Image (cartoon, rainbow, N blue to C red; front, side, top):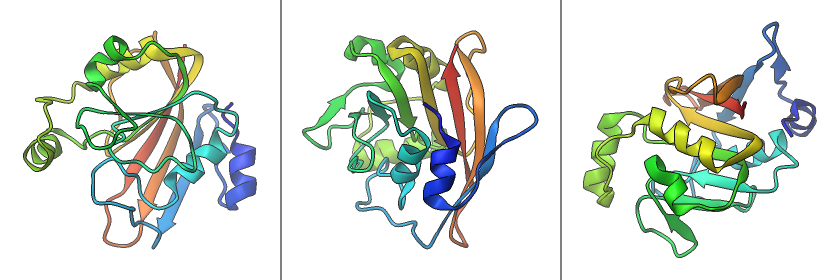
Length: 191
């Protein structure tokens, strides 16, 4: 399902497999950094188009921390803790298996970048979460992922996960235009 050849063909920016068998490279958004709304979880620019090119055969996609994501480029179920749109499943990422019975082959996640950002979202949007607890979120994603599922995790730091559940298969630098902070895309495959 992970297809860097398809990605490279579509975007002309080359991802590669390094000596440790990881997908590596960089995604430069440049000036295409704008979102269609100001709600957190909307993804920037053509991010979903790029993830769709990287996983062209994904059938059951879960957008975690999705807010008001426009999923035209990569259709899927949207989950967020804040009620924003009628087509969003309102669930706590730390308890996904309580809310979801379906199994997913691709989970795309753009979590709050640290506890400080979570506090900001709590004030701004009335977010009910007191902590992020990434370890717990990865355990819950494991429960709702099918046997060969992938997670694409966009964050400013590498997440905590259990090696017996997930294997890291990708580390990609994610850059916007000048003046924006760099982030990384970590890709994991269910073991």
